[in-house]
Each structure stands twice: as structure tokens, then as C-alpha cells.
Figure 1: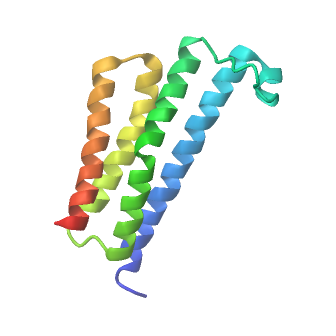
Figure 2: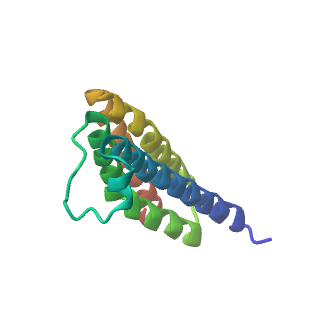
Figure 3: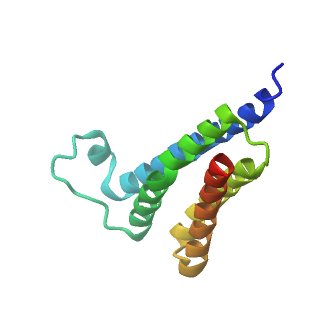
Amino acid sequence: MDAAAPAASAFVTLVAWSAALLVLQVGLQGALSTLELGPKWNAGPRDDRRKPAGVLAGRAERASANLRETYPVFVGLALALAIVGDPSGWGYRGALIWLGCRILYVPLYLAGIAYIRSLIWLGALAGLFCMFAALVL
């Protein structure tokens, strides 16, 4: 077995878990919107452009959009690290930090906890920076 294979496998596993988080957030957003607007709206073409007005559905939508802003960066960095390796281990730590912070971000956003949520967002950004630094330094 190639010595780099376990490290690559760890990054691929984190990408898989991040995909699960993405699907969970999109599903949560959809479920809360459907609770508010009904199954007919969810199943329909949504031509009337109605949007949920409720607090939780709105927060779930914004939290999901926020994840999708950094998600391509995370996937790109994680896969690059899986390919070139991460001898320092900082890339892997950064990936764990990003994923952990993104998981914590969801309930904090839904609960409307402002400042701690922002710190968690900064933590996720720091995780991306660690991943980036592991590739270029």
C-alpha cells in the first residue's frame, strides 16, 4: 500500500462527511420551508416565487447559503491535499476544524446566537487557511 494512501483516504472521508452536511442543510431548509408553505408548494414548480417568511426557515436558508459559499473551496483544498499529501498535518487539522465549525454553525444560526456564531464562522475560515497554508508553505 502506498504511504500516502491513508492520508488521501482521510481527506476523501472528510469530503464525504462534508457532502453529508451539505445534504442535511439543504434537507433542513426544504423541510422547514415545506412546513411553512405546504407540500403543494414543495412539489410544484414554484412559479409564484413565494418564499418562506418564518424565522427558522429563513435562518436555515441563510445557513445553507453560507455553507455553499465556502464549500467549493473546502472540497478543492481537501482534494488537492489528498493528491499532493500533507506531511505537516496542518491541512488535515484545518479540514477537521472547518468541518467541526460548519457543523456547530447550523444550530447556532438556527438559534439566532449572533456573536458565537460569528466566531465559529471565523474558525471555519481559519481551518481553510490552514489547509491553504499546508499546500503552499
